Image (cartoon, rainbow, N blue to C red; front, side, top):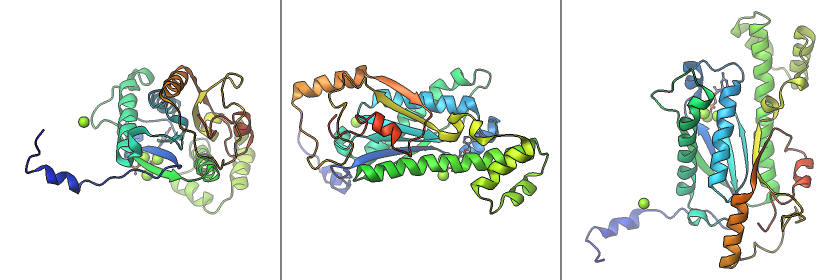
Length: 280
Ligand code: DGT
Ligand code: MG
Ligand code: MG
Ligand code: MG
Ligand code: MG
């Protein structure tokens, strides 16, 4: 096809491929959910229907992006980890972030009625922004996930204490906020326990830990089931075309697991070394 005289404008586009050998995270976050939660009167501090909807949307996103090895969600956000060797969309940042965010948005809106059957969704439709972050080492990736899970814990402990003081303790929001200023975790645990008889550790794990979603393989059948979890010195091995097709089938066939467990410690990862294995 002959070039038109306008073709040169293409040169103004920027190539935004993310560096090789980095784990790519796409984090999506609900736009203006503070307002949205009020509009639909979400339960405070946690609305189980809303969390289940987030998780269900995330499962479909993980299913459709086969290079996602793991996802973590809490509140109105979800982080999707693409394997360090992914070549999806030539690793272009904008294409990855927008594709994941729009897929998530579509799933969230399409599945809304399943989780909120009596609450019709209307304009402005919920939407999610998306951003990419690169993590050059497994250790930093693990720290990223720990950061999100710690954030979930800190917010949930605060919100649980705050709303218990307001609802059960009949305090005004201002007074509750005031008396929580400068308190440590143990102080909040103590307030919950001594004043309201609530043992925070008995609160549902889904609220305290958030949600993880991953492709689950029986270790015995996974070729890299015993792969070393430490950063390897060899880069990911190139696969032949047939191997790649086999890999794709295997990933499509894997079941998708959802759990609410600790991912800050090593136990979860040690039991499933294939999730962050060098080879896939
Ligand atoms: P953004 O992300 O900058 O567009 O602004 P927001 O308003 O989405 O703020 P963000 O993402 O920092 O915080 C999430 C908001 O969503 C926060 O106000 C708490 C609220 N939220 C999330 N999950 C629940 C829930 O289950 N129940 C209630 N009541 N609120 C929730
Ligand atoms: Mg925000
Ligand atoms: Mg938000
Ligand atoms: Mg958020
Ligand atoms: Mg096109």
